[in-house]
Structures are given as C-alpha cells and as structure tokens.
Length: 149
Ligand code: GTP
Ligand code: MG
Image (cartoon, rainbow, N blue to C red; front, side, top):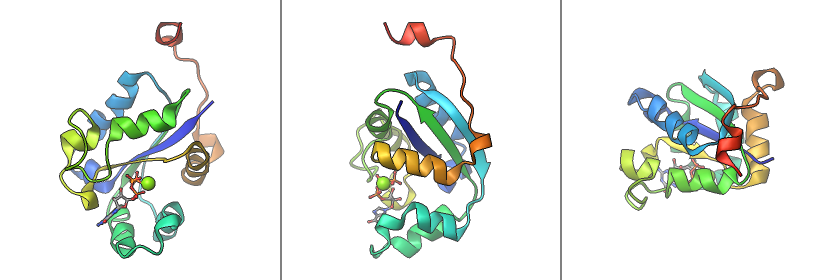
C-alpha cells in the first residue's frame, strides 16, 4: 500500500499549526504510521532535497528546514501520495486554492509550512530516510470499514 512522508516545516511548528496540519490528514481518512518532533541535521536536509541541489534557493532551503524542529509523519493508504499533495496545495501559497493547507495558512513559497512526497517512490524513500524501522507502527484503525466499502 502507498505511503507518503509529510513534514510540518519549522515555520509550521513555530506558528502553532502542528495540530491543525495533522488533523487535515487524520480527518481525510489516511493511516498515521509514524510521528515525531525532530531537529534535523544539514546532512539529512540536503539528502532529502537532493534533487534541488542545483537550484539557486537550495542553501536558503536548507537553512529554513534546519532552523528549528520539524514534525515528521508517515501516512499510509491507497492513493495517499497524490491525495496528500492536493490537501497541501500548490508550492506557492498564493497560488494554492483555499481549502488546502498552504492556501489557508501560508503566504510565501519560502515559508510554505508543510512538505509532501511527490511520487510513491519518493514516499518510500523519504519515510525510510526520516524514520528508523522501530519508529514506525503497523496497526488497524477501527474505522476502516467505514472509510471504504
Ligand atoms: P515540498 O513538499 O517541500 O517538496 O514542496 P513542493 O514539492 O511543493 O516544491 P519543490 O519540491 O519544488 O520545492 C521544495 C521546497 O523548496 C518548497 O516547498 C519550498 O519550501 C522551497 N522552494 C521551492 N521553490 C522555491 C523558490 O523559488 N524560492 C524559495 N525561497 N524556496 C523555494
Ligand atoms: Mg517537492
């Protein structure tokens, strides 16, 4: 089954939006399998965003992501990767639709409060990068039969 790596970035933590952001995914009906507050190293941030290494904003992006604790989450479910991206909204919060996390709660690309994996392959890669095996839980939510026929 698909998994995605969702992260509340340091601005989301500082602004007190952790509960609100977790709640969006929880209410939608995905399964939380990993959750922690974490101060990430420069090395981990660089590995996570390695595809953006050539971008002019890369050094600023690494400073931003390492500027304070983040909340790391692993979520599971059929179709969770594209669905989570839709819940999050466009990279630029001013372009993000109202109703999305960025559309409702942020105003600038460089402070867009949340990350979501962009493909199932990256979902797997990022969950494995940010969590040790013992930090993930497999469990059976009791609401399962009320979410899918
Ligand atoms: P993530 O979920 O964080 O990966 O965002 P995304 O997939 O919507 O965008 P992308 O992967 O292209 O960029 C990763 C992150 O880099 C963005 O979420 C922003 O925080 C940051 N970023 C992207 N483009 C810019 C930019 O032009 N300027 C600045 N300052 N930051 C940018
Ligand atoms: Mg991305």
